[in-house]
Image 1 (cartoon, rainbow, N blue to C red):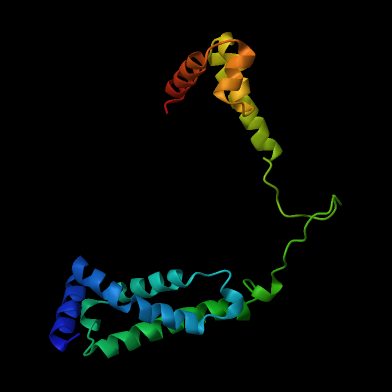
Image 2 (tube, rainbow, N blue to C red):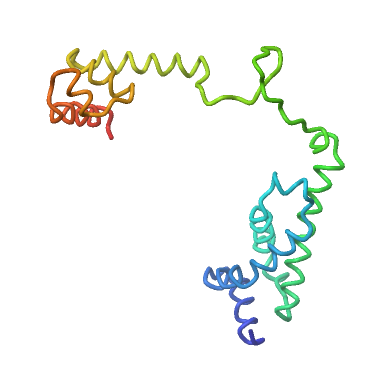
Length: 190
């Protein structure tokens, strides 16, 4: 990029021109990502995405007062963005390794439960008892709002039966099952 184009982009940045900002983001995003990836500690890579740091760097640049956006060359801007990225990563490193509250060394992986109720395990995919109770209340409320003839069809739908299987078991046509589902969807507002 020649100096005239660069100065035009920096002037656009000072004015808050979105096109200039987008062009700068596209041209310098890789510089920031490289600086973050170069400086991010291995133990932090599983907890932080480099794009989060990239966004923080852009936010810092955009927060600068216009009179402080004085970059003489593209290299000067790249150097500034790289230093800001390095500082952002260093701040997180200090927070996660040098403070007691957020110390990464204190984190413990939850053991997998082996059936022993005294040991916590990784949460399962099954709903919690309170969620199951809420779902049961909503189901009962839905059934109370619909005609009793729909109940067997809806219960079979909930249990995962296909429309053809429901029609065969309940003795209605597949069109009737489709009509019930359509009415249910309109009732639920879908």
